[in-house]
Length: 194
Figure 1: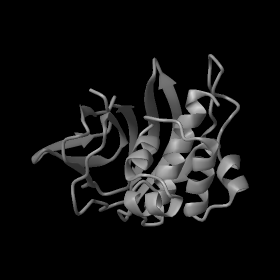
Figure 2: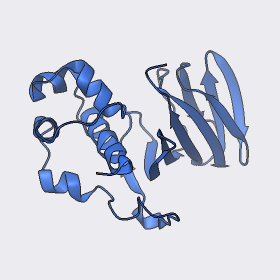
Figure 3: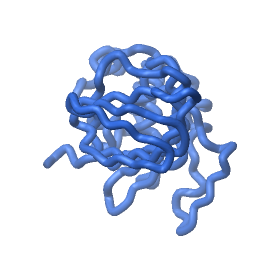
Figure 4: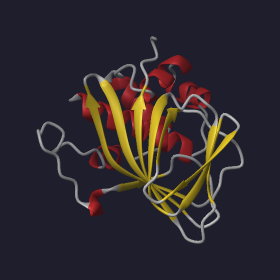
């Protein structure tokens, strides 16, 4: 498996676990592995053995064929990658109402995972609580007006504006415009050993 496919698998495990409302500890118990191992797998820090991967997929009650059919194995080794808009995969990153995520591309660049996502914030969409991610985050506002609360400071961003910050700071976006907002998001995942 190439590193990019491994990143896709890690992301898929995390997304499916969250969409089913299962905690890391619950998944670890079901798959009969440690909580730390699940965390390392989900954050692209370790590659699971085939047996562990199968146990995780079963613990999530997912169909094995469906799980692997959704993994893009064709474009990862190319020097030029083109992905058509129709191929962007919608996924649930969080249970926040009005947040629609579509994965554009996941790529390992110089041993650092990078995840590129389109986020649509429906009119009035907002999180009730701040979140933290183990990544630096870049946001480019394609359309709309978005308020970002980062570490208790408010930032207003409009079409064409961008933002870069350490995702370990508590943050939450809110669509304060009159229409849906669209944001290009790039996650630069951190090395957990540092």
